[in-house]
Length: 387
Image (cartoon, rainbow, N blue to C red; front, side, top):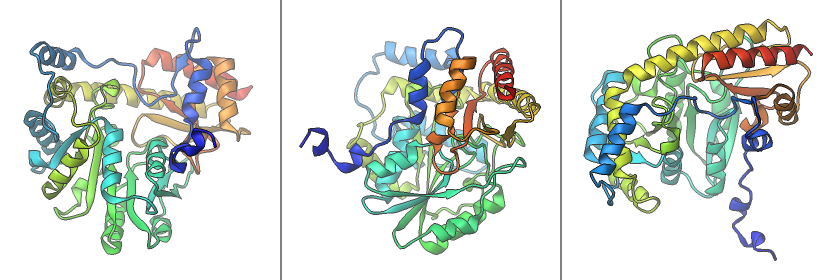
């Protein structure tokens, strides 16, 4: 028996990233326009970096609070009050090593070996992979596509629930589709979770990236204090902090100690100087978020217009997030097509195969980037699509 065969089956089964395989094929190529990963092209603003530098210079390099420094938890409460118009307590927020750890902690708290979690697909692949590694079973429910928009049949979600189901994972606005749940849909999902005794893991990381108002509808708008909802989030998108690996979970205050314990036995906390930068991001970063959203809105409309004009591209203009999820007539194997596209055009796209059931014939393009770069990418892709 090989060393690999001696590992846990769940670890061996962890999927290779379908995005990374395309990235590795073309990494460093001259003239490349890389639109395949889920981040913008702006570095973290200097006012955030300066706060972290000052903290590091002050010697904030020791162990710190498991749940996060008090100042950051208070800043998270202020940020949520501005965004959602209701009062939050600092004790409701647990600081994590990125949004990915926030999801892992939520899963550790509510689901384990043999448990099922229902999620909406196409989906960011890290969630079902994390659940699978933990020994759980991710159960996809497909979103429906039309050029008028992606939509969810809530009845299909209920039909997917079994006695093993412990939670619903709801990502809205969605990566990769841009689908955004309206209030009625959120109410139906919450009612279902209440009736069936399920947790909801709410991934609302793209709430601010919404193109029909100041923010997307949220479960915060309708939830009661005692609802079984764990909100997972990250500093990555709003404040251009992807490489910092800092995020948070919002939990009922009665669960705080449990989640602090989960932090203790995983990473034992987030570096204090990073947290000091995050405080400044929350308190001083609203205008930076607004600037990103306006740029993304312009780029979304530009790309949608140019690609639709080819007559060969199918897409729904996304309601939220910063991805265009589109299909090209006649292309079904998007992994091999993504390789051809980057070879022929120098535009890097993520293949829809990486996003699971329902995504196979699509490509994902991140449009939170410089407009001139996206104009060039749109021209190259349009020429390629028409042959």
